[in-house]
Amino acid sequence: MKPRIAAAALVLAVAFGACSAPGASPSPSPGLGSACAGYSPSNVLREFMMPSAGAYRDYLPKMGKSPELDSDSAPAYMVIYKGPVSGGHGTASNAVCIVQHNGTANLYADVSRDGMALPAK
Image (tube, rainbow, N blue to C red; front, side, top):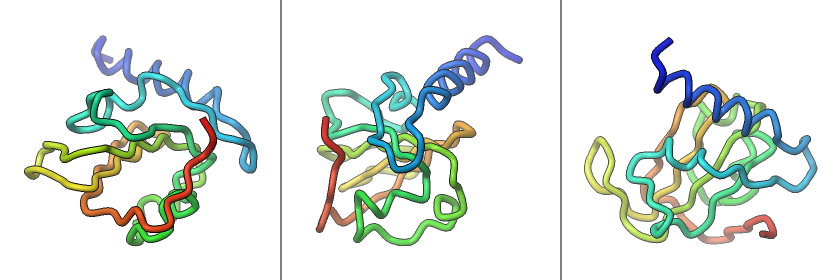
């Protein structure tokens, strides 16, 4: 395994190993947001752990369906951006990134923030 991949895997393993149990208040794990395209702490509205990837609609109820998240019951990390984000396919507005337990970072554009419910800091 290459050093960079090994380091990323270690960060994910440590962060996800420290996740709260489902139903508990999610706790942030610094460093996971860097897996997201265009990540910059100055452009982050909020970032936090979720008890499962499929819980994304608990926080953003108007977000479109995402089958890759709906079927994932493992903990995940959500980053909600303040402003536009440059990624592999151009610039995304109202962007959200969700990092799944396997290290996959999914960037979603034009996510409605209507009804947004964020966990306490």
